[in-house]
Amino acid sequence: MNLFSKTQFDADEKGYFGEFGGSYVPELLVGVLGKLSLEYEEAKEDYKFIDELQDLYQNYAGRPTPLYFASRLTKELGGAKIYLKMEGLLHTGAHKINHCLGQALLAKRMGKKRLIAETGAGQHGLATATVAAKFGFECTIYMGAVDYARQRPNVFWMKQLGAKVIPVEYGTKRLKDAVMAALQDWMSDVGDGYYLLGSALGPHPYPSMVRDFQRIIGVEVGEQLQLQEGQKPNYLVACVGGGSNAIGLFHNFLDDENIKLIGVEAGGKGDKVGENAARLQGQPEVGVAEGYKSFFLQDSDGNIAPTHSISAGLDYAGIGPQHAHLFQKERVKYISVTDEEVLQAFQKLAKTEGIFPALESAHAVAGAIRIAPNCQKDEIMVINISGRGDKDLFIIGEELGGDSWKEYLEERSKIIKE
Image (cartoon, rainbow, N blue to C red; front, side):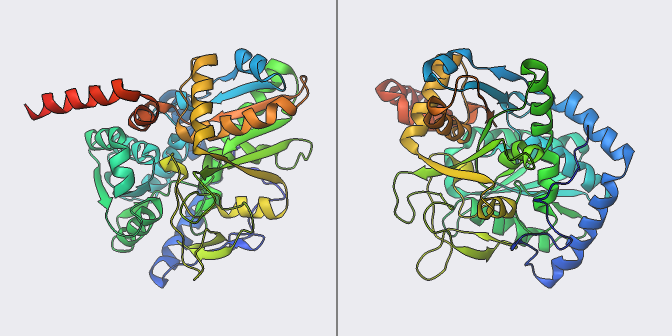
């Protein structure tokens, strides 16, 4: 199983995917990133490193994840034959464990003692805290105060694993601010600290490195679908925030232009600035932020704009540079769905297949619900269920639970106070 083969859409030696990517960092980090890049290139050729990673994928994370035929959803939509790649069944509940294991092995290889991370929905933070506990690293995780409040179950579990979780109280108090706080921490501790970045973005080599550790998703899909159907997929659908789960699914198929790739962004609750996190709709704007060049949502003054999504993991103003390149080259089609469509998709998947997707993954389901009925019945569509919905209990409860949910919270509050 080759996780490191190249495609025509890979970055060049300086980390540019076409015009996007690169490394825009303070001088203090230039040498650190250069060393990380060299270490990673060596690790990719080290069979001991690869064997240990694959053993962890299989015996710790729980790979391969199932590729499940969603027969009832397929019948209800009446179009393409729909398969679900069940990344939510992994240890920690999402695809994030894939790149966390890979980066933890690199950190160990480099002699680091401490992991530093940012997180939005908490799934990356949970996976980072998990690998830190497993390998014996100290761990500090930054989380925007807004996300800290709405993803408290993951905050609780991160702390139980021994991680220090710090809510970021400045800026928009969301993911982009957590990224900046994590970078500042890293710059103060480049000797012992390793920044375990949570998506396929940031300065080179992170976009390529995170993607490579996530490529196991698409590799498995290709092998599993060949066994189950004897053919390649016609459509691949994934949600896109920073873009790690999507690029993990897509990358193995990029050179086959017969396969249609669909990335689904957060359309939020409206088209105005601050009401969505749809970077590639309308007229995308190029910018440089957080160490890389890509498309970013910006205000009229060119500053990074506030964002909104019902899902904390997609509530981000930028997008990974390889996704920006794939958009520009028209290799991937990017669409957006609204919060309302996402809630409807969550309910539909629950009631047809007995599966609670993470709200991020429900964006991909919503995109598939829109597209699949217009497909031929002999076409195959794979949706990446990148995480499970346990973490979203309080958001879902508030949106769909009605009075009974509010009464339950009030009762629990009284008991706790007593």
